[in-house]
Image (cartoon, rainbow, N blue to C red; front, side):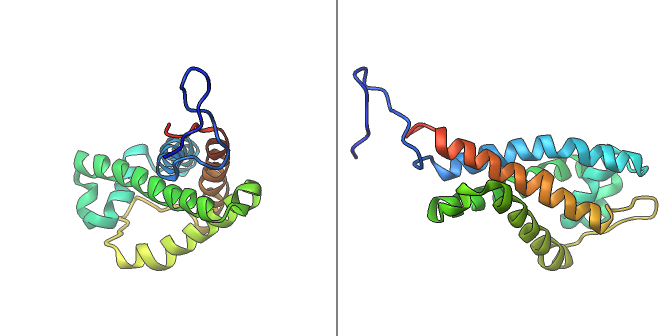
Length: 171
């Protein structure tokens, strides 16, 4: 493999040649962490605490048992990040194949977030064990849509855009 190098034999940045798996992993982890903050604030304002919010995510695989204690919190937190990382990797792989997506992250990101919102709401959640006990409420649909557009899709697209331009080959 021919890797461009400088006089000190270091890999040089080559635009458009970032590792999409690494880029997607970073975008998913950052978006999962940063995007969680406003979601938790919104849910707290609605009377839903941090632990029930994470248990809500865990209920998709555990059903109502997710609300029985700490395991639901930890599984829900892991699922939250998994559900951020997998779509971010998909987006980064799509950008590698369809570079025009990377030229318009302000449009591609919310469009991607809308697609993820539809897939989650129409395919994944209805076929999961997702359950909401009395006293815990899931986010209203409009708020969930806005979160997917601007706190999920957009940050993923912007991070992928930045990393796929600036990441060195082999890095």
